[in-house]
Image (tube, rainbow, N blue to C red; front, side):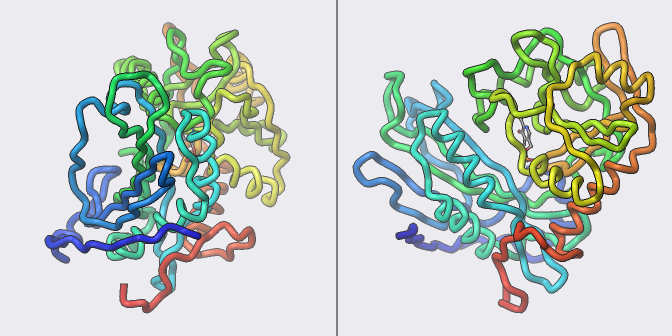
Length: 365
Ligand SMILES: Cc1ncc(COP(=O)(O)O)c(C=O)c1O
């Protein structure tokens, strides 16, 4: 049986005027909707106390495990306003399954995928007015789970809290879909074999921030990580997977080695690219293949992909003492981006069963 949610409406809903102001320039992750979902877990009771409740601060004991040992995971996917006024999310079950793989790696309890999806659906329905209807805007959903047992013993938490919060989102990078500049991190790695690279846990992102700072100091927007063993194989950016377009039209993405996060966007693009007539290869990519390929013209485009930013063409790759730039024209990235967002915004038919209807048109929401 699925979770049974109680609902407590906020006594202070955002005024329609303020909401219109927020949705006009949502930014990314700056504003949060009026409600949130919380669910608790203990070994004896399993998942219980599922609530849709007013968005607001949590009261947690300072000795809660999560503050000390980082036993926490998260997800990210989006709800899109459809042409008929309804709302749909993109492949929430993919994220639910990935969430469980992350939970397993972090010794957190799994949550049934149906409950994961239902929790997000409840929040989207509750705060449906927060789903923007402008181009390129959406409602970003952030489910997360953390260790809330109190005590300093290092062990899997005996009390866990699952939450979903939501935030209206405009374009992720200030520069929109323009080419971005990437910093090659040579001193720091993100994930090692046997580690947590394939899990979406907070620690991976904490560990990427120093490299990110170095990248920003060198005029770059994002950081590229190489494998931790040979420091040679291209893995991914701090928050996005990578693709290369070869001069023969083949699309190449680094294969999943256990140290790369399996992106939902990456997965969808494999299908869409094949449908658009491209060969798709998942294999290891040497950093020198990137550097030389761009120089010789064997690689015609490089782009990154992820839920927040969709597809972002990469212009320049920089490292200590050097850089290479890809051509300014990015027809394949542009074509794939359109194919994906047209599907997400319901402008083209969903032939893959990827869209999950949450709110029907005319439901008064
Ligand atoms: C490290 C990392 N790689 C890749 C991705 C892209 O994954 P997705 O396409 O599911 O957003 C993300 C974002 O979730 C990420 O954090």
